[in-house]
Length: 165
DNA sequence: AAGAAGATTCGCT
DNA sequence: GCGAATCTTCTTA
Image 1 (cartoon, rainbow, N blue to C red):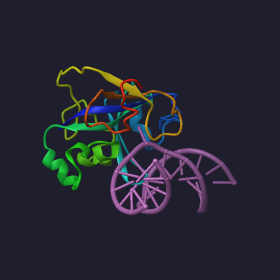
Image 2 (cartoon, protein in one colour):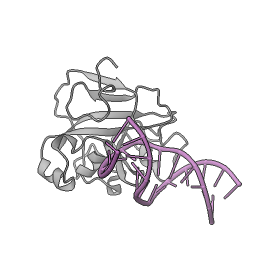
Image 3 (cartoon, helix red, strand yellow):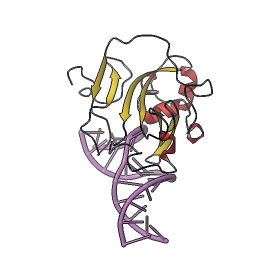
Image 4 (spheres, chains in turn red, orange, cyan):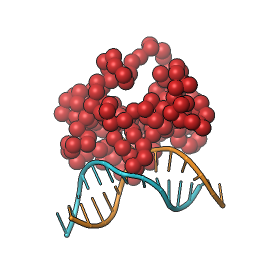
């Protein structure tokens, strides 16, 4: 279990969004009701986990980019031998690896109890920063990456995570 | 049917 | 900091 500390938004009519050119067999989960998982294999090496964010029929979602391990670190580390605690789920591909997320979870409702789910513990956050998104070529100017300011488990460069950015 | 591109990671310099 | 690895999916012919 962990705390989500960094995300990126992919909107409808956003050239960087996989759903930009309509529904395909791969991205269909993005069109599900908000809260459903969209998992896909990126660069042949990493699974990336998104959460659909709009009403049914609208293709948009949020990419989970980094997570602060809270419970079960031993288990996560088993999947990621050799990584420091800080790096266990720092980065979208590492995050899924630590939780052993794969295509089996594509399309499930993350707001319902199950093997993989997302909830709130009611805790508040001091400050949320914003920056441009990482690793994309289209729509690279939009500041749609959000993160908990000053958190130790963020991916991205020092500059991107700076408060002033 | 073939080819290019991609929301990354890891290892080396 | 830079470049290769790796493979699925979508686009174009």
